[in-house]
Length: 193
Image (cartoon, rainbow, N blue to C red; front, side):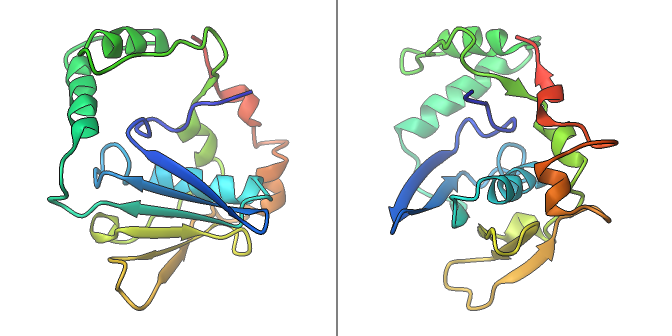
């Protein structure tokens, strides 16, 4: 079943490339702490690196302040503006507001093909770490060989990567892959349409 990603990832563009049948996921996003650059995005990508064994590397890069604006930025801005001051309670509400926000914004309905999850609550069971000084960092990497660890640096030409653990105390990869007992599976975090 396809699934929606954590709130705030709508403006993220993803690109998947493959080398020797081992995929690398590379994402680039606006440098916006409210939408993309926050602990929930970091936790989500750490979770993907742990639970998807076919992924060899996940990279996340944030555009530097003052990057050139383009048509997509304008359309996303109109989507965001359409939500201001509105009571948005369901994914259907978001679709209706986005669809009427501008001619450049078209909403494709999946009629139940997408499941929305409360990713923040689900991931908070396993993760509590945060990247120090995240607001000045622009590059992040997640490797399945170092589960629960994020590597980060300020800029592409920064020579040294920093890293920090994101796991809560006592959390293991097995607990994340097979949550039982006090840990609830993702299926219990579905947000009704």
